[in-house]
Image: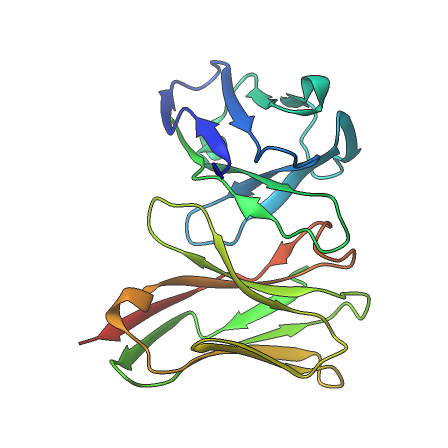
Length: 114
Length: 113
């Protein structure tokens, strides 16, 4: 069974530029999460989807961040415009949505904003 | 407000020794407590998880001890190996395994040969 796939793995951009990250969850997993991980810290949830519906986006900075999950499968997280403080690892996770479905993480996208 | 406090920040253990990492939480609504292992450049990988209806769970060399009254839980790694060297995160959720995981700040474990 393939794991959570994320791309790109690394991205370097200048501040004020836009950037997008893509996530393909484990097949059959209807719940998808985007987490932000700063250096030396634990991940923090940005947004959680159940199928195509964003059910928890309270921690997503909506002035510059947006996300979508078309057709309830793949998801894209966008930042526009990027700021220096956005440099971090962006992790995608998925779970089966059943009562005991554990969260499985992808390898993450390391963003560097210069 | 940090809802899950993890200690120590770093830990050095000799090969074959026992590694112990502790976490404390504040929110009594938490009902799911996983531990994740993360290697450099990789995403966190689920190691073991526990729910508050049991006080201990063991899987191979990894054991979670859970103290509901003290609002604390810990990870014990028996017979620690150099391959266990990684960063370990505790986490908690108030909506089971589907919910928003609140992570601790992590413990960097080094196992010396």
